[in-house]
Amino acid sequence: MLKSRPISHDLSERAVKKVIEVGYHDIQKLGESSWEERTMVLKDGGYNRYREQGATNLGDLAELINEKYDGDLNNLLKKAHNDRDETRQLIKEIKGLGDLGADLFFNNVQSVWPSMAPFIDGRSLQTADKAGISTDLDAIYADLGHDSTRMSRLANGLSAVRLEKRQGDLMAI
Image (tube, rainbow, N blue to C red):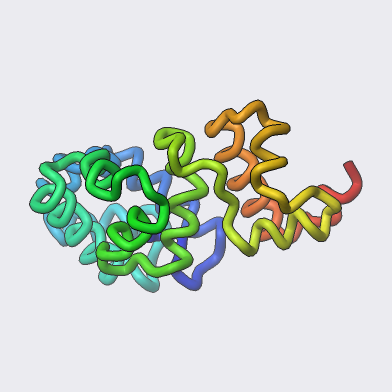
């Protein structure tokens, strides 16, 4: 959700690193944090413009996961019966997470939820196409040995190339 705001890639990366550094990737710890604490963490991570809304959204995220999924996001996957479309609908119940945030979520989560692979968000597929890389997800996944972690790395790598405007570097390979 932090990466889906209209801010620079560098700032969102720094904010996410700070959130992880203080342990907010642990839903219990995130849920125990105050709005003020979350706001300061985001500020310390350079997430200034949207820090208050981000702090609220992080609190809402913890509340939803704790109340609806017994504190375990894996229960969301179970409720969705490992179906990507159902998972997308449930993920979008998180305040502050729309289609872009869901796409970024799937780029990452396929490494721990292999049933969500293969996935590369549409904008990153356009980057792949411009670089002469196949856009056939099944073919790409097969080339990666049906390894969902490698698929996640590719999806995130293509996203980073696009955001850092380094498509030319990719095409030179």
